[in-house]
Amino acid sequence: MRKRSWYYILDLDGTPIAIDDILAWGRWFEDPAHRIMAQDRIGDVLVSTVFLALDHNFFDDGPPILWETMIFGLPEDDYEYMTRYSTRDDALKGHARACAVVQARARNRTTNTHPNDESTSE
Image (tube, rainbow, N blue to C red; front, side, top):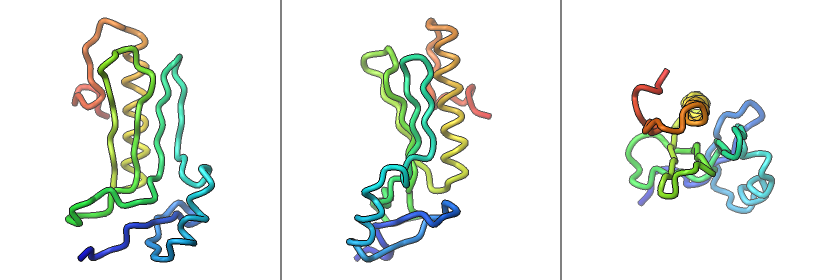
């Protein structure tokens, strides 16, 4: 049996709060403004970081995984990027790293840098 809630909302300060009332969670979840943490468009590419509102730590070991950064629209056909985080601060840092990678790729289309490469870390 799961030890913690699957469902989370954010308080006014952006702190996640576990919630077991699925109807209250659903009402909160309906407004995408609650969940979008950061979005940056760089050329035709979108970097998006959101609060997932569902714990994506499916094995219940370690902290809840509640944020996600994705990059949409990179020119590489088979390239996908998605990273998840346990804290708001890590999500903000991850968003900045993803933006830096997209900007670097825009400056130099010949690079083979992957957003998870350590060379792009702060």
